[in-house]
Length: 99
Ligand code: FES
Figure 1 (cartoon, rainbow, N blue to C red):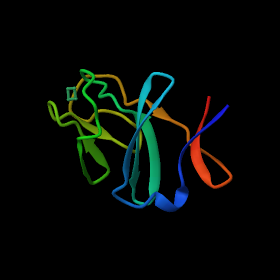
Figure 2 (figure 1 turned 60 degrees about the horizontal axis):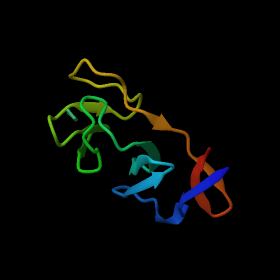
Figure 3 (figure 1 turned 30 degrees about the vertical axis):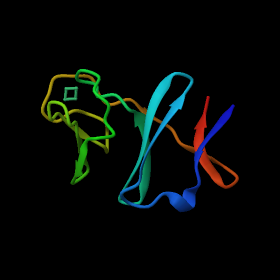
């Protein structure tokens, strides 16, 4: 089942959108013109990531400052699991995910 999240025309650098899909809190961001969909949950202690800062391909959690490498989801400066990323798909004029 396809769940539409956004129109591709709206996905510009700096975009941030939060969504709830089947009780999962998701964050869609665009970095270097690439949309990235992830759990809106820091793998360190679970803080929402939508308030984090973006710099040089890293998303830094606003709570304790763990930096997550968006290329691979791995934390740079903390011994915690990687970020949970989800695969985006397109259906017509919408981007979203398949469940
Ligand atoms: S919850 Fe994000 S750095 Fe700890």
